[in-house]
Length: 349
Image (cartoon, rainbow, N blue to C red; front, side, top):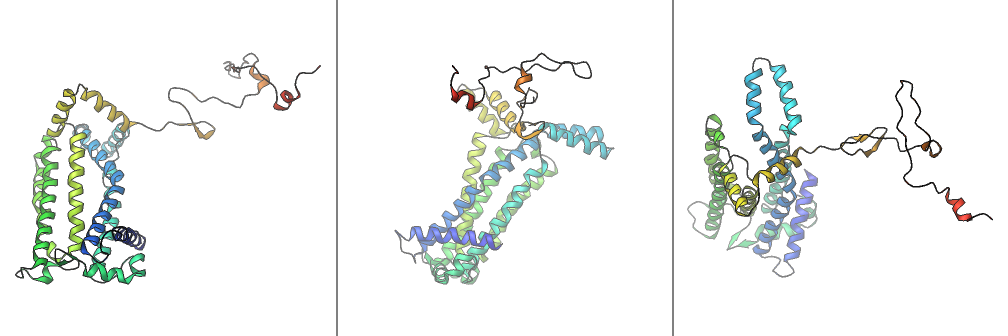
């Protein structure tokens, strides 16, 4: 985790220096802006992982009817079912593990960011740039936003002590909870097919809809205000990012998809053609390498040919191979001009 600590501390210290050019370096707003900027940078770097995760989840939803049909057909034969499922995934270009891998990659980054902020808020430097600049840790620890120290927690302040720390912490906890709830509600109500809203899975979705925000309510009292600024900014980013994705590229068969189709038709575009083009891009496979030369790639629909042909034999008639089949005649499209040295000598007298 040390490389992650170093990267997070470096970005945070860098933004603090940038904002210190126009603001007071000891101000809590300077550190708050640095924390928000750090959150934006981290989330922007994770956009490719998010897109990959969404595309993988969407592909799994699209092939769900086919997977259910295979389960009904080969339910009693697990080996045959696994074989047919793998075949289906290859044909559709679907990787079930792709939806989980981005989450696993994101976790160390998020944890590293939280540990750096939490450590700085408690006067414990984490990361190379904070370790080399202990004064910055002290500055962050005692910086104030609306009169509340960034390192303060609601539990240490007391739930009955109605001061600036109480109001800032309560505002951030409520903000974190509301943004997370709206994000999950937006996903379940607009971007999930009707069949996914029934059965045991739907019940789990409803539990998560209320459970995760409730966790914020109970655990937020132990988070330093600096960490809650990060969480609040991250939730706002997720909410806006998800709205854009659902608005422009919704999952087929969902209410958001129906709205998207209506918008495309109103603009004079064919939604089916757009969807087919997107699916074609997702299924696009890499061209196979040319035989004998892995550095070259054969064009689709053509066969690889040997480019190292003897010029003397290129203009000769096709010869018969051992099995009686004739070899393809290869001719140069332009006349042979001889070697470079011969051309330099010029015409002979």
